[in-house]
Structures are given as C-alpha cells and as structure tokens.
Length: 479
Ligand code: F6P
Image 1 (cartoon, rainbow, N blue to C red):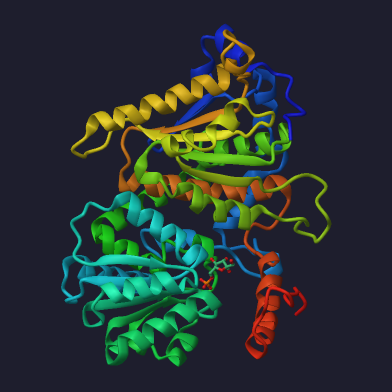
Image 2 (image 1 turned 90 degrees about the vertical axis):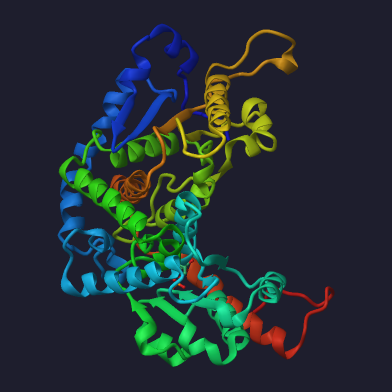
C-alpha cells in the first residue's frame, strides 16, 4: 500500500521551516510527542486539530467519566479510571488494598515463595508483563514466570526447574472461562498437589467460577465486571507485576495514570498527550491511508510496548460497524507491529527504508537510565535519532541501490527517563487515545465480538479431534 494521499515532502518542510520541530510537538506528562517527521502541512494540522470539536470529544469525555454507557453492545460503562482513582468507592479501596498487600508480601519474600506462575492471556498478560519488565528494580524476592498460551514444552520445562512447594500461582482471568488460561491452571493445580489451595490466587471478575475451580474464597482477588480485559492492568490483574516491582512503584504508576486521567478530562484537546496521539493515529490511518503502524522502542524497558498496544489498539478499534450497527465506510485499526529498535534495525528496517511500501513508525526512547552502562543508553538514543533522520530525509547521493527515498512518516515519543509515574501516564494516555479515536470514528472501543467466533468453532473442532485424531490427509476446517 502506498501513501496514496500524501503529496507532502516532509524533508522539504523540515529544511525550510526552522520552527517545525517546536511547533509540531506536544510536551505533556513528561513525554514529548514530536510529529515533525510526519508529512503534514501547517494548514492540514489546523484541520486535524479541529476534529476534536467537530466530533464533540469534550462531551464524549464527559460521558466516559460520568459512567454513561460507552459500550452499547454490552450495555456497560467503562470505568477503569476509577481503579486508579485517589479515593474510589470503598469496595474498590478494599480490592486494591488486598492485591497490593499480597504483592507486597511476595515482593518482600514474606510468603516464603521463590517463584510465582502468572497464568493469563490477552489483557490478563500483556499489561502486567510490560510493567514488570519496564520497572523491575531487581529487588523483589519472588521471580514471576508468565504463561499465556498452551505451550506444553514450556510448561514442562518450567515445572521441571521449579519447586512446587516454593511456587505460588496467580490465575488472572476476568471471565475465568478462557480456554488457554484454564488449561494451564488445571495443569498447575495438578503439579502443585496439596499446596495448590494455600498458594494460589485468582484475579477475576467471576468469583463464583474461581471458587468452583478450587480457589480458596479468601484468595480470590476480585475486580468489577465493567473493567475491560485490555484495560485491567490497574486492577488485581496487576498483582504479579506489583510483586515484581514492589507496591510503592505500582502505586506511583497508578498516580501517574491518575494524572493522565485528569489531563484528558480537563483538556480533551491537543494539549493532552492522549488526544495528540489519537489525532496522529487518525491522520496516519485515514489522512494518509496507511494500514500499519510500527511501535519501535529504543528504551529497552519498553520492549513490550508494541505487544501491549497491539491488543489495546487492534482489539479496541478493529471494528467494521459503528456504534449504531451500521457499516463503517472508512478504515479503522491499523495493524500494529513493534519491538526493540536496534533488533528491528537488523531485521525489518531494510524494508522500511527502501521497500516500495510505507509503514509509519512511532519511535520511543528516553534520554537516560540508571544502570551500570549509561553509554549504552546514549547509543540507543543515537540510533533512534539516526533512524528518524534517514526515514524522513532519506539519502539522495550514491548509486540507485544506495539511495533512500525518505518521506516515511516518523513520530518520536521521548521522556527524560522512564519512571513509574511516567509509565502510568503513558499507558493511561494510550487508553484515552483509543477512546478518542473511537469517538472520531463513531465506533465502540470496548467490545470484541470478532474474537468470539474462533473460540466457538475451536471448541467444536476440538471435540471432533478428541474423537478421531487428525492425520495430515484428513484434516479439514469443518466444525
Ligand atoms: O481475546 C479476547 C479476550 O477476551 C481479551 O479481551 C481478554 O483480554 C482476553 O481474552 C483474556 O480474557 P480473560 O481475562 O477473561 O481470561
């Protein structure tokens, strides 16, 4: 797919407008979003900013924060912001206190556990794993092992290495009905033997199902059903992440997210990072008609950001009908891909620089980190900036095979150094960006009916496979 709508030469704009980098960037919550490298003129930018008014984003934000039904297909509000509120209602305070107490115990080694198996998939895995990876200060006692899909080899390998009498289990599942999670949880229950009851916890909105599974009622860490799976990081689904990073850092992350909530609520316009991210993604998808977006991290702590955003953005915005069930006639979610910057430079970047198709990129980085190799961090940053330069400005000298066309849309997302508050601010801002995009596009960001059909069919096919094992010759997709 080419940038069929793009007639703008960004290299020229960058050379002729010395103010462009300053003008085409937003500084908010400790993050600078710089979109000077996106083919967008000043006039087009003015038009883009007007989208918040023409779609009445302010009213939609009021609806979100006042518990209106923003998920019409499931008749639900979306109140994940109250999970991180300073003074939520007493039930939420109680739920938060219980899972943070447990995390504190695990972090400090008070449960006598050396390891924890965290079993969960989708939103019950991606957010917590990202946070644990990003903010681990290597000062916790329990090592957390993340299991999401039915990978028998990995389960066997892990359980051979671990001591069941010193290993805890967290089963994270909003529905407590997800096949992958329950399959793994049953295997873990069998492996743990008698210790299962006293060393297992469930993070779920379905206490009844967790207890029926065999979880001790006092070890069920509940959260409300109105929390969407991909917005559940802030609930007890985050318990294993909090066990890794410690209670204090998890609370700082909640505080950062809370600030992003306030910002979005008070400024549902281009001053807030969330809205600017949404406007940028809108322009790339609908303005330039680009069907992909790469999230490339030069801050190693955010290696998993692309995976996390893949679910958040694609499961929320990959919709073909609007909120009134009418077909949408314009593109919706881009295909999100991502990973670590310099790794990707040695795999996919050749195609990004010289391939005939255009893939816009969000390059994520920070200026410093507190580890023993600060110069490595500077090297990361130099690569980020070099790629931004080459992708946007290209190279015009040398033989044809050495030239780079440039004009590839690149935005930079930078912070001084990644803190728990900063990460909370960033993730909450992406959540709100998804909501803002759903408002711009008139769709429901909070359901995911498309994934249900596959689950239904797999259950039927599984019955057939159990009755008569498949051979390569007789394999069919019939239920
Ligand atoms: O992929 C569908 C989905 O329902 C996601 O929305 C969710 O995050 C994931 O499955 C896991 O669901 P649960 O937490 O209920 O096990």
